[in-house]
Image (cartoon, rainbow, N blue to C red; front, side):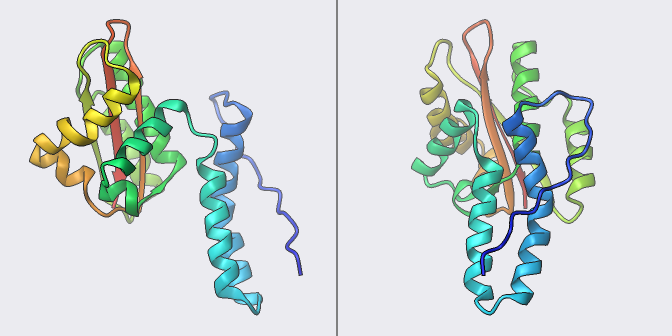
Length: 192
């Protein structure tokens, strides 16, 4: 028996998202319900649930921005536990993208707007501990070099940052953005 696709209800938002982002945001909230529906009613429930979870994670995380793809690839290459154990989640990706956008706009590394991002994520994911880390590149590094340096040089050099970057987690989001002065700002937001 083949499952018929369920059309998710999309929430209205003040922001205007591109079609792919709307799809990603609409699929994830209904996905857990679809998984529990099939897990209790299908004779091959274990295999079906695993397949649905894999499909859900792919639909929720694709298409990713080029910057996020580079960060995830750099994290996988560095064998960072967060990237290996966690699932990319649209809420965490959005928080990370907001973070790097603020850093690039201010041309300064830091955590501007963290309280707002934290409150937003904590309201949506009340059972998770939320943390955020950031780094900045040397001037005029390529995006790939900046991503690699974040996972292999910057964050490992700080015990506090590395404790967050290299921890098992449930969800994470990561991104980077280059400012007009040629410095690339990176961020990772983690829920564990």
